[in-house]
Image 1 (tube, one colour):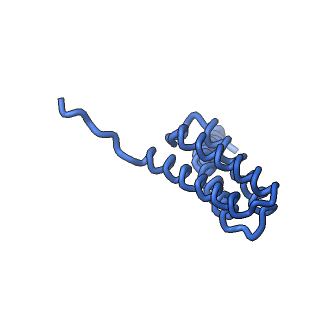
Image 2 (image 1 turned 90 degrees about the vertical axis):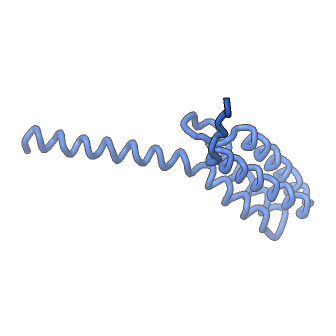
Image 3 (image 1 turned 30 degrees about the vertical axis):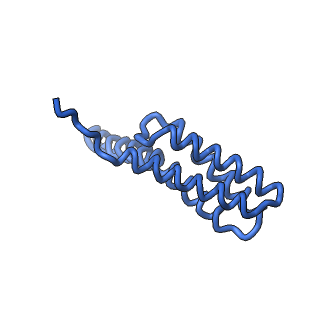
Amino acid sequence: MSVKTLMFFTSIMIMILFSLSAIAGESHLVHAIKHAEAAAAAADGKAVAEHAEKAKTHAIDAKNDKTSKSDPKHIDDGIKCLDDAIKEGKGGNTEAAKKAATDAVNHFKQATSAAAAPKKQSSY
């Protein structure tokens, strides 16, 4: 195999690696939303708590992602709601757990929409 061919394939592999990293970074908040939605729709407190714990893991990863443009305040608020959902779900208070999970979903969606909203320019 020639050096040019080897360099070509190496550069292709590096581009693929960087592309996958970018996709993975954006998907943490998406996964958090999906698990929080599953928690809000769960039938019992135990299932709410399980999904909320998975959502919290992804939300923390999304918060720690320095390349993300999501609003960290809403992510923090969503994580607090997930903590409540976990606590209430494990305590057997299914309705309160589902409400907290729904609140987390709303915060996470606001976190993503805040990143997508265009910044207002000053009229000065």
